[in-house]
Length: 258
Image 1 (cartoon, rainbow, N blue to C red):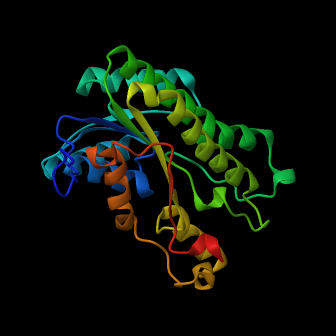
Image 2 (tube, rainbow, N blue to C red):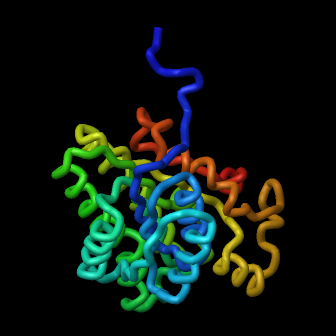
């Protein structure tokens, strides 16, 4: 007979400290608000400080706790400084959401070296460095942790019409998730990923304006609402997923299985 209660499920994040990257718009902004509403103290990070401060006010007005911290995921010093600032303000980071990322939307052979470096650094190198820094501190303090990396359905499917490097780096994020989950399982640090399909956001709205309602080719002819990721995120960062690590959850409404 199991000692666990029925049902063994909770999304209470009281006492947890979360750091979310890419909070100035889109999914990251939603993720930060959701984690704060579940009881976590949240370090909200990104490059546009004004937007971070606006988000911090929203979270505070809803009864949550957060601190805005500037981070540049292409700059190692900025990443390490952000972790220091978050820890000093809120305590040891026990939840990390690697959400920051940029698209390339170009043919691979037409990309500038500057853009290649930016996509690699923002989407893969930066998250790896940040994950390792957070893990080091958890391991030193013998604390468990939860990490959720935001990959993409584009990691598993590519139509050849541009954004090859985005697909490559997001596939790297998926493999990073699997590899680090094995390495850090012994320290009770769970590492999982979400691979979203096309969700409504500033970036996606721009695509619709440029190329039309491309989502009409999807099985359900719609974009996702960021709220539809709440349950997956909360499951992966909460005690409910204690036995789940190294998993990539596709949340794509069937978009990637055409």
